[in-house]
Image (tube, rainbow, N blue to C red; front, side, top):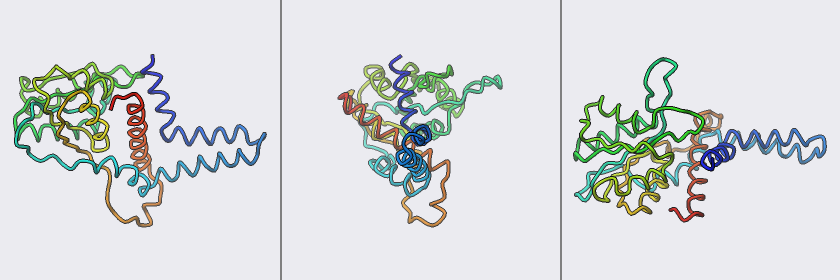
Length: 252
């Protein structure tokens, strides 16, 4: 129940829900307080706009995605390649098995690229992190894709019970030989993920993938709102909120 509640609260904090809630509140009270109502409506609209333009989404992503560069072959000391789940698509309505999301596929590909260079066990981590859906665990769908891409089943380890990164790091402790891991996840997620795994005693070598930040000078069209920019802003804000939460609880 607590996990479901925390997810709902997070969804309400993230855009586009939060700007829409602010605007709705403004419309509700505008008859009682015209000035405050107008202020809230304008604030919600402005917030929705700025989070939908690339200069803002880029600025939010930059501190998250620049903490670690792409993985380079290490000199040893690593015991496993740990690939974190990034969601799956439920295709049961087509009578097809669940497929990894775009984010998960980016991580699978990066994990397999590393595996083919150093041949360490490939560990997929992630259960069902969405309490509103009953789908195949992330790790199961990702492992199936890895086998289809030629990774032998004997080299794959699956942890499919954890609902979030914190639970995944805790579940993996003691489940693999050694503590040196190459951690594969989205670049925006790496700061939180590496901190959580380090807290559990792992020695983390980051292997970020799926970069969204682009170091470029803004041009006119960058100020046109786009859904992709709003999604990037939402992703970044989710990471900041989660980092704050785990920091307050002493888990990072």
